Image (tube, rainbow, N blue to C red; front, top):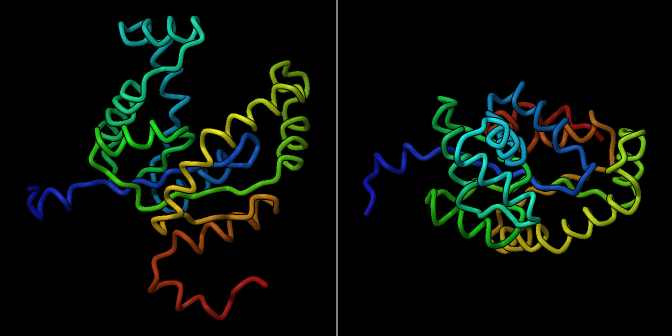
Length: 205
């Protein structure tokens, strides 16, 4: 049994999920700036570890070369280390958990349940359009690849969203709107309840 002290030390974790091109990165940067969270991207941490040349990094590189999926525990350890090193206690974890197995492993290893999941809901058409506009000339962003990535997202990550939805822990944002409009919706989610009351008169219609 953990003591009360243990409970207080647990960091606040928000999982940020959304398909490729849903604008997660842009909004995470806004949340960091306005609400003091630390943004951790599972993909960035894995890439950095691979480049570091550490034993762990070499193993990750070998697995990726062989087309294998990096075990959840490896990603979770990198996330835990980044959380400890940051000195912060509020984290946005972006692009993780990618599937149910990631989710179960994260809770089992860290003993942390997310405060909530921030889900950027965006249609496939809109995401396709954005990625093609954004990455002209990047060969991995042709229509086929985008559709594959989107399919993987639907098959793997949506069950995670559904799981947390069943626990009342999903905050869904309509990500098809402009960056500013999306951030207005995000701000409402992150603003403490007592402050919301003060701003009630200036809701954006």
